[in-house]
Length: 417
Image (cartoon, rainbow, N blue to C red; front, side, top):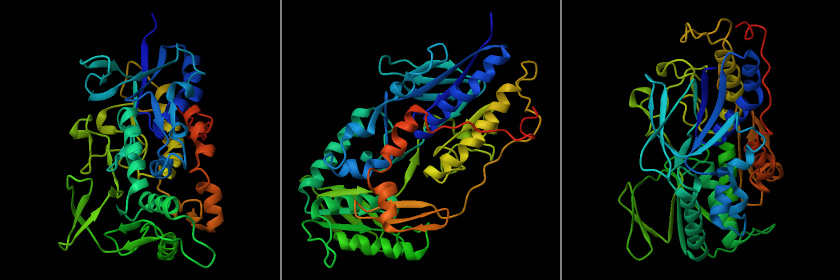
């Protein structure tokens, strides 16, 4: 009987979906051609649905601006083209990883006990989570839908809103809320203020990853929408007062109050289930420039936000996918059961960070600021590229279904396995 070799993907993030499709479309057929074993691809995720979190600033502002059902999509629908002999989706939460026995542990909502699955190759793509629950999904879909509904309700009635952060999510959400409550500014006048929206950042400018001129432009566009931007201000505490308001304490001792408080200043890796000796000092999975997790043993990879190589943006996913595709395929096709830890001959593909500016930040439906690989975009291009629907039409279904995942061609050196 042929040996069973499982290729396991942990996490239904964008990175997890894309890597699973890549294996199923372009690697599995080559493995079947070898005929040396039976291969099966597993995708494990806590929810049966995928949250298109790119659009979270709009849908969390109001589902009138974008319906929740448009951004919460069934994962199985995206994989229905594959045979059950090749692919299995498991709705469960990863609870552990044993690199000695090469097994992952998981727990589904149907059982209180952990189950185990052996892996021949493992791709960890559990991503990251935001401090504000409406901006990401790390557990059941009901939790993020509840967070969206609660945020919608507060946005609708709030008189004072405080948003903390100077990055794209903070700015996008501030602009969405301002446009929703205040309306669009006129040609020669700002939007009338119906709600007090304050954006606090600990930095001395907005969008610190970009050139200062773009941060200045962002500030002006936010002010036109009715958003006050306050720099060099750090929040040390935020507590609800029991009457629906949040008391925000600043580093200098000043206290502010808000009907809605939104921490939008970073992410945390979804790595609590991973052994500590595999993580770096920030709890990201320690990853080499080949996307391998060398300390975890052969054929273990990190992809997307969970990897220490990532800067937590979509460009790092798109540019790293060919690296994962090439090295994973080489490792699997060259596998020798008599020497299971041996690396393939030939040349690995390595990931190199593209240091050119790349970020697109829409401000509602009124434009925004953006730059792609160092080329600054006009405001109308930001709207065209992202502001219309937060790229849902361009990359929502195409990511879920794998349509956007193209085959990576090997170089002659890489093919020498």
